[in-house]
Amino acid sequence: MAKVLTSQADDFPRWYQDVLAKAQLAENGPVRGTMVIRPYGYSIWERIQSEVDARIKACGAENAYFPLFIPESYLQREAEHVEGFSPELAVVTHAGGKALDEPIVVRPTSETVIGEYMSRWIQSYRDLPLLLNAWNNVVRWELRPRLFLRTTEFLWQEGHTAHATREDAAAYATRILREVYEDFMVNVLAIPVLVGRKTASERFAGAINTMTLEAMMRDGKALQMGTSHELGQNFSRAFDITYLDAAGETQYCWTTSWGSTTRMIGGLIMTHGDDGGLVVPPLLAPIQTVVVLVKEADGAGERVAALADELAAAGVRARVDDRTSVSFGRRATDWELKGVPVRLELGPRDLAAGAVTVVRRDTGEKSQVPLDRAVARVRELLDRIQVDLLAAATARRDAATTDVTTVDEAAEAAQTGFARLPWDVVRGEGEARLAERGVTVRCLMGPDGSLPPSEDEPDLVAVVARAY
Image (cartoon, rainbow, N blue to C red; front, top):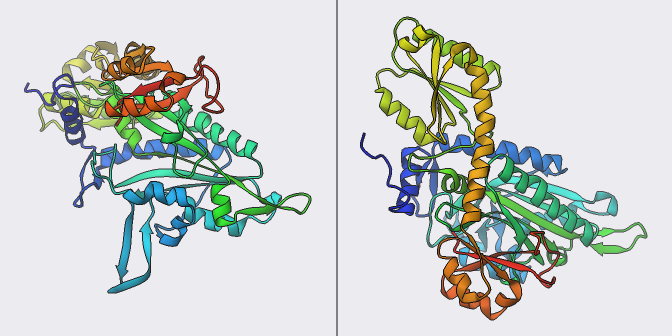
């Protein structure tokens, strides 16, 4: 059979584009930088939404919706914020056939518009904390778009909260980082992430602290998978988000924001994908098992349908492929491209033998299993594959992480993976020297891998890499 995809070793970016097309995930939209997410790609996003949304709600936040259009004056009220986003803004100046009195910004993020409404909804300490989340689209004018990784318009969730104290805000931002993002990424996406603190130069515009989750892709580059920000009182002062405390004194709130995006699909592709295409962890997979009819004869089609029903009754997301007008090889390749964790193959010969062929997508391992054991075997494999994918990704990351002692050594090591070195060696001039080689400090961590409360803690470790 002819090779379907460019190999990762030959051309990783081309391989990525091939997977997007051949697995029918997404394609470019009509306006540069936009994307059309195809049904299979969107079904993966829906699973991500469902898992992340449940974790957000478990942390007490409620979903709301805020407008796509934001008055330009709102952004200008927080100087650092507007300065940080100015190069990426899309601005509407005409509507209804005439010039607008005030330009309207297409939301790049919603701190400013949500801040306006927080100031209306919060009166006293009894209204706090106010915990909001929104699932929406945003627009950031992207100069070098790449589907799912950097697009002009993308889908995401953005959380925004207001608290009575800095300590409460910091604790909640960290809770989201750990209980929502890290838990989902590690235990559902099966992607090991480094949890750390951004340097001052890499912080979100308007934040006093940005915490990040960084993953290593198969080509050794880093991908920022999600962030959580402490905004201090910057937006509260700009938008007059105040409350009356128990003593009747007016106080400014402490706010946070946090978000994760369709970029996680890009991370999924580049962490687990191989030369056969996408590999989807079972807990995330929209289709966990596909039952493929090899040939319709001697009741094989009926048994395939019955087997799919048995799987569904056991809680497995199963799909039947009985398209016998399409060659078996073509269908098997299509399901491999889509990364379905387990494939069952059943034809007249299998039925006569009372067995079914079971294929693992991640390893390609094939085995014959008695039909009356098929459902149990599939459930065992789904659990095993989930564990094995995380272990394999962790092993790849660790093998491509190098401890160094100088900025020059870090810049060199970062060409093929992550480099770790003392933050004191990098701080200041070192960041600029790394940037000249296309390398950035992805995060700061404690010497024991902990999340540091500030970048001035002793013995901090800087993790540096090239990044998407």
